[in-house]
Amino acid sequence: MRIDLRTGAVWKFERDVHALLSPRVDISADGSVAVVCRKPAEKAVYRVFRVADGRELTRYVSTARYSVCHDPAMSATGDRIAVNEGSGTWVIVGDRASTPPQRFTGPDITSIGKIGPLLGTPEEPVVVQRGQADVRGWRLHGDAGLGAFNPPVLLRGGQAAVFRTGKRGGKIADRLVVAEVEGKGRTLGSAPIPPVPSDANHLLATNRSQTLVADVSGSNKITVYTLPDLREVSTFTARLPSRDSTGSQPEVNLVFLSDDEIVTVSGTVVEHWNARDGRRISEPIDLRGVFAGGLALNDFQVLRHFKPGYIQVAHRTSHSLHAVSLATGKEEPNLRIRLGDDMVTAMVEPSGRYAMVLTRGSVIELWAVADRQNPRKIYGGLGPLAPESSQVGRMEEDGDGNPGFFLTFGRFVHFLRLTGSGEVNVEAYSFSGQQKFMAAADEGRTLLRDRGEFADVLRVDPELWASRLCAILGRDLDAEERRGLPRDVPETVCPSA
Image 1: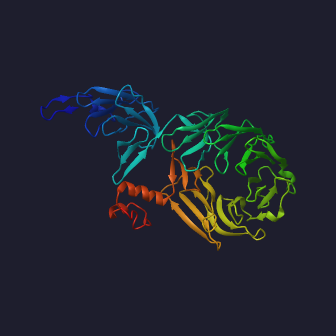
Image 2: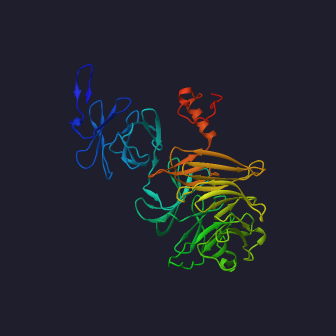
Image 3: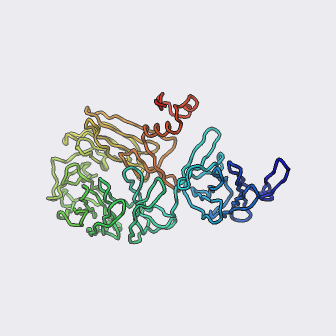
């Protein structure tokens, strides 16, 4: 209700609110708009009123499967109201009946703390959550009703990702898209693909400069697209993999060797292609003919080799990394590296001096491998890694020519930089809880984090954090503010403030 304190006049906007099981009432900061939620039947109803005369401006009926009244978050003037539909789904309702509701994804907030106000812009709204000892701002992300049906590839800079998609809640992917993961969530590129079942293990391949992406359709048709507009540049057909012992058809795997060259791995057969025009570059290689005694289908992995013109074959049974020439189809024995008996696979950095090794138990070790005859473990182990939530990769050499690796596991992010003396400098970050990182870019400094119903971008960059903090505060942190931060935060965060 509205009460005029000068005259005592009373206007009732909604009756029997006190009798409802879980009513929610809020008013805008300028006092001009009120919102009331009640649940008269199966669905919660949010009614928006103008305080001056009690006129109903608009109403929103919840579309959630399990519908209850949540605290709304209102903008200062009441022209936008954020409605929490639960399970990470939010709807922005305008103050006019002619304004259609807009769907967003955001945090799954229950009854903890107070919600509101609504800040930000119409394109990038921010919901404030106030607890007993903290205040959080949650950014909402535009929801186009699409879901990612395979692990996305995060593009450089962390602004966009490429993935297969289809209707949210469905099980069939029918498009390849490049979509913003920050900002307005715009679709930057889209290409139709033959409808395929959702596959959480299906991997796309991008070249190093991230100007091309390759995908497999059907059983063995390869299509290469430009990034980010997804214009088709070539198609070619790889060898159809032989069925395994269970009768299943293995997938064709894709590995970019350079910006223009790609290999397909169909069971034990490796084929070498020009990604720009689909032309075969060299004759197919059956790896069963390369290794004495043959090669079991599930016993190896093909990766890019640090030496141009070769592929790396990580052979689990021999605990070794083999270099196979694409031109001759033969192994180069002088490049063979035998690692520990627990080796599953490994990646070697471009100089060929160090390797990150995955061992049984999903533990990571670092090895010095410049001496091919006598490689040695120099650091480890870290883990265990979880395939669906961990990321690993290489780091470019620093100014002194020292390479590095990064990895995420559990609640940790580690950056491992090798030194000239063979020691390892570790830069580690820990979180309060387990994290699920779907993709990584920028040498692990930009991570795409799975938050359940949505994903957000996390930048592991202390200098960026400090610059944004100082720009907002306009001063350095005081003693009370420091109490909520880790102990190793520098004494001076904003030196020029």
